[in-house]
Image (cartoon, rainbow, N blue to C red; front, top):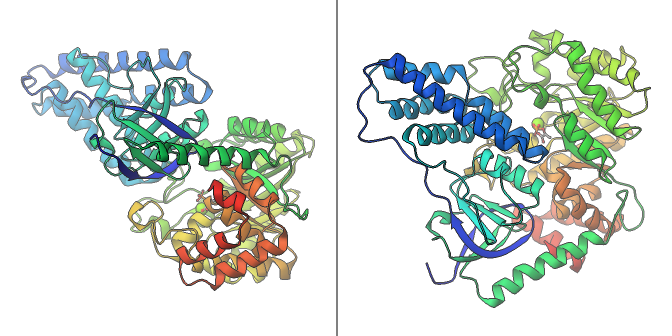
Length: 562
Ligand code: PEP
Ligand code: MG
């Protein structure tokens, strides 16, 4: 391709990059000429050795990688020694497959199983394919697939980057990432943002780019231009400059231009995240997704194990706000020890707080551990505990009783179910606060699976129906005199954040990388301006119309940086 071409995807790590692309070589496939296995015992030994060599290689790279990279590489290395996978390969060998075909087919079966579990497990499918490709390369004596050593700055293009690839990236030479697959919660997205490498995922036509093609990309807007003109480059680079300038305008605690304080918080999933978040100028965490700590466990964690994790989290934040969400197992976040099996509709099934009926010990042990951690840290933190997926007043009341009976200071509910939003006034008489989970509230309001990329239009956070339910929650909060926060993805959109504040939200919790732009957006608008934006958004007929109406009212410095 030598002519200029615009491609579009989802921007997941802001920043501009202009460089030639390097398209990753496809992984070595099955050896078409290999014989069928006649000695499965000897062949499985070869496979085992190949997998061990892959694991060793990944661990060696982990030893010299950064903190985040190390964990990803170690997790992938662990998959390379998975006993279940070896067993599945042996089965294929016994059925007469050749060695590389056995590895290939066994992985496929395993991947289908993981993909069907959805959420975190589904995202690990990429790791599994990485192990397959490395093992086959090892067995065939071919070079390991992955990012080649680069001597010049380049934008890496791939179908999807295996976490092991992303973890080993050198930001000095890899100045941008483009993938054909992926989504906002994929490993590529999370790691690229952590490394500060501009990245655009889900780019249609990405794989048609040839190595060496010059490309300009905007990891904020998701714009990709192949063979860009000088004007394209100027537009993308100057937009990034405006973004940098915008972010540099504000620091410290969050507030609107007229001084209305808005707490700006970071979403975390484990104690390491907590320590990193505490080192920034955020004001604490507004969502600690406790289930993330225990995703890989086969059995429920003990009170002592949990106390250790929670103590680290509370200690990291000192006297800052720490909003802990009790286990939200089920649907896109299955936990082996908690999730109900064989549900036809897991998202509408026994997940979140609903698990307390069949497994009351899970919540009890979690609250006991939180109480112990709170005491161990001198009751210093502004600790708030909330339950996911609350739908009724009875659920809110029962949860509040459990939290308060342990002398814990503050109890709340997540608003993720439309029924709870509509009746927020009543729910909030039972608890001290609410936090809106816009990811789930949006999926249940629009009856659109949040993991289904093709329904992105329905899941648009600007959908007026979603905004109506956020308004209902805020109205309920006002009448019960209870603060309302937002901790779903919507809170990290700098333009929408203004609408949320206009509706009455007093805290926003988001991914760390999104906070500076939200803080800057707030600092440019006073509360009456935010209220006018909320009114304009609610008056619109469509999601696009709502955004347009708010853009028309926004400060030009913000509009220029979006
Ligand atoms: C949400 O649903 O918006 C939320 C914050 O919770 P999670 O994404 O963990 O379901
Ligand atoms: Mg949720």
